[in-house]
Length: 340
Ligand code: 6CS
Image 1: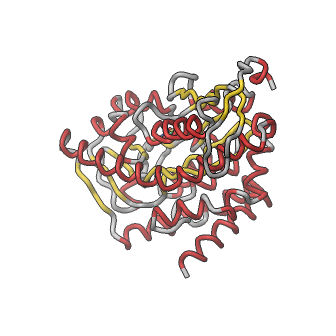
Image 2 (image 1 turned 90 degrees about the vertical axis):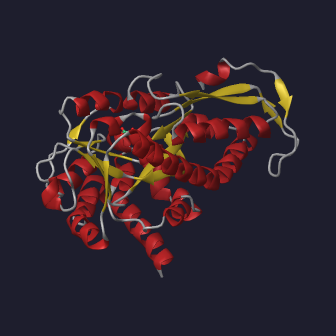
Image 3 (image 1 turned 30 degrees about the vertical axis):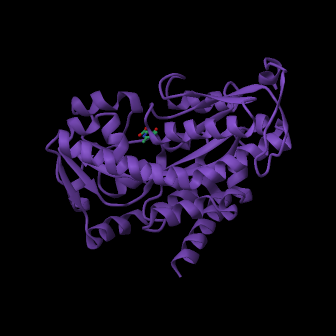
């Protein structure tokens, strides 16, 4: 446990909170790698997490945020979390190469049409503590702590899209995971993978003709400036996993772990409200600053995409085997229970 050796060994007395009453905590700092820049949903999550941890440990434990770009590219963040160079990280679409089962969050038309319901499903004990979900990460030296939906994925393109035919041959950029590539191939597109930080110029130069992001990201990364249409299809939410290094997690004291669990629980509603606020406000900014055209798909149009996306569930199972199959069955069971 390399990080512990470098810790200041001062002991601070944590003030009373519900589960971590008058607890002594070793002074330490946790490094938290973000896949997004300052002002993003992940940054807001990290900032609030840091505040809660500091408060619950009376300042003994601090959390240092590393926004996107500071640790290199996206996979560099996951490598750092796996090696223990950082203790905490977010992982989303690009994590598919490291934790193939995490691509379950890239499946289209699987969760409900209600964001809050999905947030609750994904943060229920039945999902978070599910052995298959846990082991999928832990087998790769990571420990999943929470699941964070960041808003609906919204397509952008330089052409109108209402049907799969409209997507035919579109060089749409996806995050680096096979499941997303297969999904967009099923829609008839010609997906291309590009690092997040290189995407603006790829869109500008026409190397990529379409993009998939929650609204806040279309705005803060300025992608909307080089696209003509924003298409709301509610095909999936952008979902990230908040995770820790496995050995670090296992080496925490019960009290330290309790601090994280309390913070994670307090953050569920906080970040849901925050992402909705950011996504709503930033859509207004986009409308004010551009003449981008907004298209909203109706149910019939969505159904045409959903039908093509359905067989990709088998692709997920093919890629992840029995564990992936059990995870998908579990998720569908939780979704179905909410829809009854
Ligand atoms: O598209 C991407 O690569 C990135 N988009 C967001 C909204 N968060 C992180 C992710 O890697």
